[in-house]
Amino acid sequence: MHPADPKGLLDPKRVSLWLMAAAMVLVVALKEDRVGWPHFHLLGWPLIAASLLVSLRQSDRTWSKTLALLAYTIAVLFFTRVDAWDELAWINFTLCLLMRHFSFWEANLAQAVFFTSFLYDMSFFHVGPLVIFPFALIQGYTYERTGSLLYIMILHLLIDTALFYMIANRWIPGWGW
View 1 (spheres, one colour):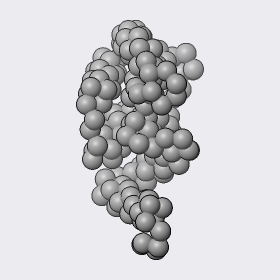
View 2 (cartoon, one colour; view 1 turned 180 degrees about the vertical axis):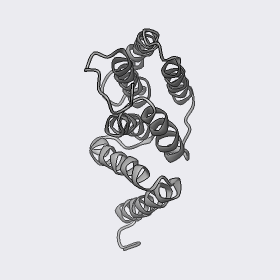
View 3 (cartoon, one colour; view 1 turned 90 degrees about the vertical axis):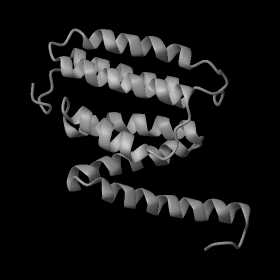
View 4 (cartoon, helix red, strand yellow; view 1 turned 30 degrees about the vertical axis):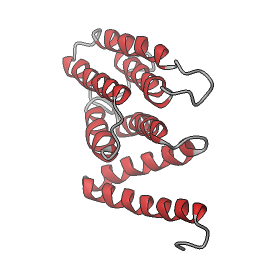
């Protein structure tokens, strides 16, 4: 199957992808008590298992290996707090792996879910996902257009600089801009 050829919404490969994306939201983004119940991750682990089991229905074993890597990444993020590798993990790793199996747009949408969940866990609460999700889509699109991780890192650093000045100005009025 060519990544751009859709087989339908209930294709096992597609179902396993979105089960894994939902697991990322539950296990990583909602692992702490930010929304009233501290145990959302308990719902995510069975989704990881279901995703891996559904992927076994595919004759393409590279997809099962890809999902195993994503499951491993989710587990690492759950048990640790890894901060400075978002572009490397979500753009270079996740997007590129998913583009082997899906069209760019579906792969980019999925990596944006992973990226947003990761940053939500770090500290971007409340309206953060409304800003981070489109930013992740833009980063994926930029990577698709340029093929360069350097452009993604520059884009991210520009946004980080603006955020730093806005946060600093919020806490120390008159400082910065």
